Image (cartoon, rainbow, N blue to C red; front, side):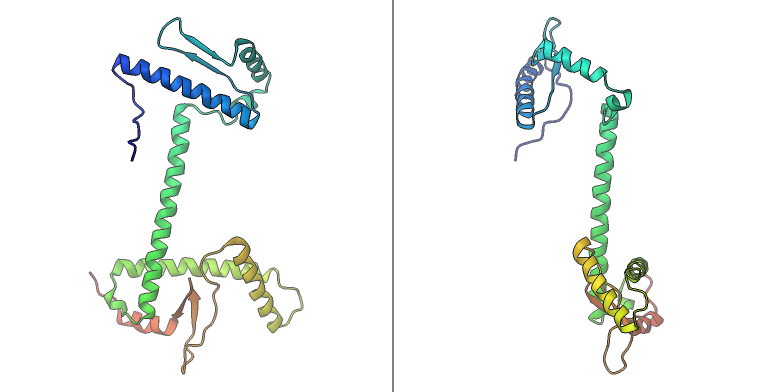
Length: 225
C-alpha cells in the first residue's frame, strides 16, 4: 500500500523545489481537464519559490476577465462557500465526527440486537452486565418512542369514518409504504401470540419480545458486577 504523504513543509531546499515543479504541472493538468470536462471557467495564479517566477494560467487576459467578473458579483455571492484553511479543517472535522457518531450508533444497535436475541433464547437477565441492562432499557424506550411517533404518523393517513378493521388495515398498508419508501430500520410495534397464555409482546428489529418473560426475569433482578 502506498504511504500517504504528510502535508508538512519540506525542509530540504532541493526536494521542496522538485516537489513544487512536479505538483505544479499536475495541478495545471487537472485544472485544464476540469474546465474541458465540466465546461467551467477557472484560473490559477502561482507565486513560485523564486522571486521572478510567476505562473498565470491559462493566460493573463483570461485571468483579468474572470477577476473582473467575480468582482462584479454581490459580496454575498463572492463569499458563498468560500473557505480558508481554518474553516475547511473545521468542516472536515465536523464530517468526521458525524461519521464517528453514526458508526457508534450502528455498533450500539448491533449490540442491543444481540442482547435481544440472547433474551429470546432464554438467557437470564441476571447473567448480563448491569450497564448493558441499563443501556438495553434505554434503547427499548427510545425504540418505543419512535414506534409511537410512527403510529401517530400512520393514523393521520387513515380516512375519517373508517371502522376499526379498516383502520388497522390502512395503518398496516401505510406502514409497509413508509418502510419501503424511507428504508426505516426497526419494526412497527404489534401484539403477538406467545402460546397458551397468550402473553403480550411486540416485535422489535425483527425479534419477538415476550413482555411477560422480561417482567419475570426483571423481578429477579440483575447481578451487580
